[in-house]
Length: 497
Image 1 (cartoon, rainbow, N blue to C red):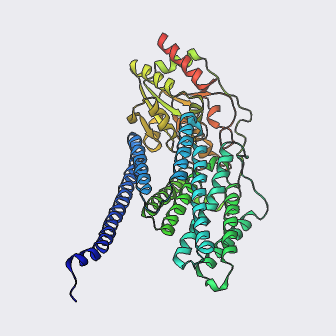
Image 2 (cartoon, rainbow, N blue to C red):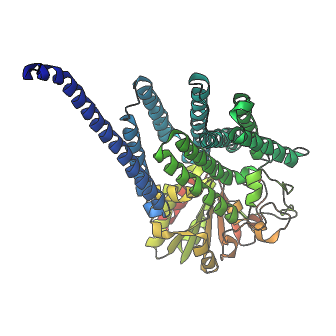
Image 3 (tube, rainbow, N blue to C red):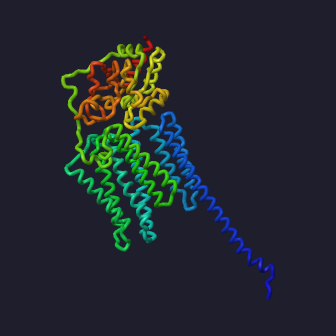
């Protein structure tokens, strides 16, 4: 019996509707994935451009804005993922994290940037480690599936480097915040202990990746590896002195990036892979460059002072010597009538928040016909770029901020080198005293200027814990007091001349 057209249409309508709905769903899902991957690509490009902008002080602000925009695009792209079933906890986390970030940015002093950076690395690594643990637990306990070798390698790498970054960054934070002793903490057989524990951690990682699931014990070994990683982070940082913490922070940044990149492989997230690789590579390169700038063995920092004893002090350079002080009036006269002045900013300027007074003094000297330049040591302050950021905040022109290699040959022509709170980066012991812990570290040649004025609160040593030979140089005069107060008086005195 032939079918009736009306009856056929009635049968076909639900099937056609279902087919159409499926087609629309596939199109919508395809469009959603296109938007997600497109946002990730855009974010990656913005991250790269932002990183490139950080290579020059005059482009750094723009670079940070591009990187922040990239993060915003990445977050928006992630939030449209169809696998997100409930936004309640995500929104709560966004609000809480944004509030904490805003509070830190608004009320954190510039002098605390290194500590803030260290604690941020700890939180970033904690997030990566918790995601890795959660993913491993979901696969093994909830789904009861076997974890493939490649996925296990990504998960293991993620939690191993993430866990050691957590405690390593916390140790660096503690030393910079002076919650822990800044001096190296050593004990017998330390190198052997560090190497042995790291080897055990690496062996557990290899077991997880290579051993068949039938052998069992993967869950126990996984969590033991996390604990071992946490211990490694503590042990490789405590024997490193406080003066080397900037290098350690940069290295922890690299480790956190590597953990994030591994997390991207485990979760199949392209953005995490790219951003983590950028962070890991840039942090590693920066650590090497900073080690060279400070004449430190990168292997010692990498393995926790492995292979060499730590010297805590150089010879006493002040025996039988006295310092010469100067009055505000005499210092102002020297600066006002100088043809060329080189300002050497340091941590003391950052602590006093005296960058605006420095800029005002420089402008007064230039109005009187003098020339003022700023000598920036790679690790002046507590982190690379610390002085550049402070001076830029005070509207000091970028072309007046000269790096060590550009300015060092100009010191002999300078009438006055004005050292504001800098210590180790101008200490001639780095050239003259082989027993000094900073021997071999490239320094600014402030001692070669015709005269030196040092603004200093007291005779306390710098971050390396040693005395500064420059203070006892016959050409050096010290103006004691808070840097901001001293500069304010110098500005007033120069105006009156």
